Image (cartoon, rainbow, N blue to C red; front, side, top):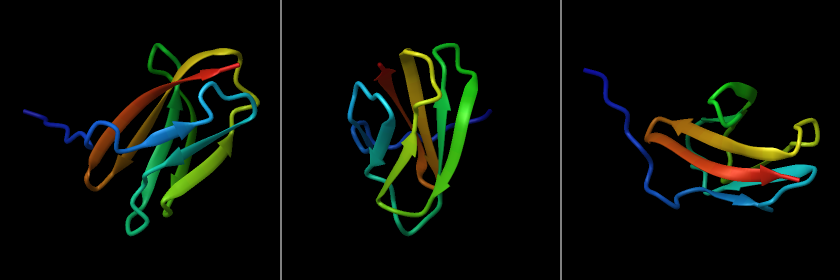
Length: 86
Protein backbone atom coordinates (compact mmCIF):
# COMPACT_ATOMS: atom_id res chain seq x y z
CA UNK A 1 0.00 0.00 0.00
CA UNK A 2 0.99 3.60 -0.52
CA UNK A 3 0.56 6.08 2.30
CA UNK A 4 0.75 9.85 2.13
CA UNK A 5 1.73 11.90 5.16
CA UNK A 6 -0.26 15.10 5.40
CA UNK A 7 1.06 18.18 7.13
CA UNK A 8 -1.00 19.46 10.03
CA UNK A 9 -4.13 21.32 8.85
CA UNK A 10 -3.51 25.05 8.90
CA UNK A 11 0.26 24.56 8.77
CA UNK A 12 0.46 26.72 5.63
CA UNK A 13 -1.28 30.02 4.95
CA UNK A 14 -2.00 31.62 1.58
CA UNK A 15 -2.41 35.37 1.23
CA UNK A 16 -3.90 37.45 -0.12
CA UNK A 17 -6.87 35.19 -0.77
CA UNK A 18 -8.47 36.06 -3.15
CA UNK A 19 -5.29 36.93 -5.09
CA UNK A 20 -4.92 39.20 -8.08
CA UNK A 21 -1.26 39.23 -9.19
CA UNK A 22 0.84 37.65 -6.45
CA UNK A 23 0.29 34.87 -3.89
CA UNK A 24 2.41 34.18 -0.81
CA UNK A 25 2.68 30.79 0.90
CA UNK A 26 3.66 31.11 4.56
CA UNK A 27 4.49 28.38 7.06
CA UNK A 28 7.12 26.52 5.06
CA UNK A 29 10.08 24.81 6.75
CA UNK A 30 13.23 26.81 5.93
CA UNK A 31 15.47 23.88 6.87
CA UNK A 32 14.26 21.68 4.01
CA UNK A 33 13.26 22.20 0.38
CA UNK A 34 9.53 22.45 -0.30
CA UNK A 35 7.88 21.90 -3.67
CA UNK A 36 4.97 24.25 -4.29
CA UNK A 37 2.52 23.41 -7.07
CA UNK A 38 -0.54 25.30 -8.31
CA UNK A 39 -3.29 22.99 -9.51
CA UNK A 40 -6.57 23.69 -11.26
CA UNK A 41 -9.77 22.36 -9.73
CA UNK A 42 -9.42 19.10 -11.73
CA UNK A 43 -5.94 18.54 -10.24
CA UNK A 44 -3.89 19.46 -13.32
CA UNK A 45 -0.58 21.05 -12.35
CA UNK A 46 -0.20 24.54 -13.85
CA UNK A 47 2.79 26.02 -12.01
CA UNK A 48 5.61 24.60 -9.88
CA UNK A 49 8.28 26.19 -7.67
CA UNK A 50 10.83 25.04 -5.13
CA UNK A 51 11.57 27.01 -1.97
CA UNK A 52 13.82 26.75 1.04
CA UNK A 53 12.36 29.55 3.16
CA UNK A 54 9.55 30.17 5.67
CA UNK A 55 7.56 32.09 3.04
CA UNK A 56 7.54 32.14 -0.75
CA UNK A 57 5.78 34.58 -3.11
CA UNK A 58 5.04 33.98 -6.77
CA UNK A 59 3.02 35.48 -9.62
CA UNK A 60 -0.47 34.19 -10.35
CA UNK A 61 -1.13 36.92 -12.94
CA UNK A 62 -1.10 34.43 -15.81
CA UNK A 63 -3.95 32.36 -14.33
CA UNK A 64 -7.55 32.91 -15.42
CA UNK A 65 -9.97 33.98 -12.67
CA UNK A 66 -11.25 30.98 -10.73
CA UNK A 67 -10.56 28.55 -7.89
CA UNK A 68 -7.19 26.81 -7.64
CA UNK A 69 -5.29 24.68 -5.15
CA UNK A 70 -1.76 25.05 -3.81
CA UNK A 71 -0.01 21.79 -2.92
CA UNK A 72 3.08 22.00 -0.72
CA UNK A 73 5.26 18.88 -0.40
CA UNK A 74 8.33 18.41 1.75
CA UNK A 75 10.02 15.60 3.68
CA UNK A 76 7.38 15.90 6.40
CA UNK A 77 4.35 15.45 4.14
CA UNK A 78 1.88 17.25 1.91
CA UNK A 79 -0.53 20.14 2.48
CA UNK A 80 -3.23 21.31 0.06
CA UNK A 81 -5.16 24.56 0.31
CA UNK A 82 -7.56 26.38 -2.01
CA UNK A 83 -7.29 29.95 -3.20
CA UNK A 84 -9.29 32.19 -5.51
CA UNK A 85 -7.72 34.11 -8.40
CA UNK A 86 -9.58 37.33 -9.20
